[in-house]
Image (cartoon, rainbow, N blue to C red; front, side, top):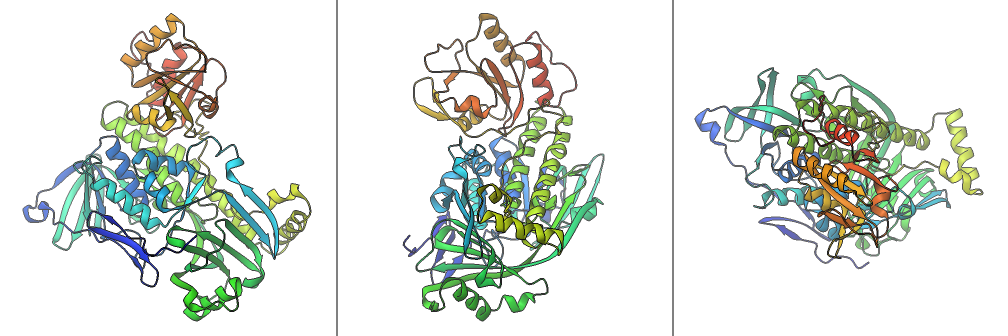
Length: 584
């Protein structure tokens, strides 16, 4: 891979890019003084998003996608963090599918680095390798298993999408350099006090979406209880550009001989910049391990003792420690907690930023359905049920990895030593080597708006349109415009067609018949499942139906177009009563 001579691109007038030898430039967005500062007027908004990081911006784009107005408040006037650190870098297939719906996937795919192969080493021995494309959880989607790209690029693409006239310029009010200094809520609404360069003012909101991050002030304002743990594991990140880069694979070392027998991660990102994570001693001094001369010595030990400074560039260095936190409730009154505001987890397996984007995707369609009068407020209760389950799962998985990488003396260390020794000789033991179970979408098992056994995620499978042109599931979901999507597989009787027409006219559902090659369609709206991938990703077989939500999860499945389908639609929208009409 040749080194880039320039990776600049333009977001309107906002430059963002990397030039070797000069580092990154980040965009700066203008502060616009709101009218309320001068007038003293207190305006009320249906939705206020607090925080303009990846979760808040994804939420803003999703709401705009569904036609919902919102105000987004951010303390800063740029993306990422000062200093252009990479932060989150691995974006999983489910998140990439979300970005496809939001209109930024093509830019991410063009800018980032796609990968599916990972290799794990113990000492100098390769003990485990995987190709995510061969795994059932990733094999059906038209998006790759992962793309590596620095988080500030993704955030900038989201801002750019919001600034487009056709992507929510009139719907999302981006307010930079707005610091929230006070918050109150009661049964009448929420009140936020804001400090800006032009002065302070107050606004009110019906719903507040907290995306301010791990140091969220809303936790204290809402007296939110949190379950947390903190270990003594210490790490140091080095973002490095090489003139002659290593192979484009995810490499991890459990006992790296060049890092005093401790773990190391190595990922390629955009612009030919590598993210390298070095595990440090638990008593390491953060300033000492981040010194320029120490980092350069570490790089020479890993790559080449004769590595010359002109052959690489240290783009950014930073120490960090892991902790796990999860709010006991993700909703407090009018406040919904998303992303790091709701949960903090170790980065093993790339579950942090991906989880935040998927939080936003989960809540956005539900909030749109409620605000647009298509679902009762009870639907919003399912946000906590589903995303809290996901957060607990992700924390549990990442904590297991942390314990494998820094085992306690005794049984844990004995287990790791045995697992590594066995993995060197026996394939069955390689699955015991835990350097991070890669992020996968959640199967919701506690949801009150999914049928028992359903709640599974789908993948963006290929299909064929009625005119013979290729298509994909995400296009069907987008066509449904935030409504439920009913896919009915196989031939339809005249009675079934009549019931589906009644269902479409009386409920918030778009219906599509899915036929196999050689079958004739009975419904006007139909597609062909040429390879059987669409039926496979919906987890149904034969003559059946699958009710899909706007976030791509299966709400319910069944075999007959009857009253059970009507009840499934009501349940998926959080309704406690039967739907009206004679659709059944």
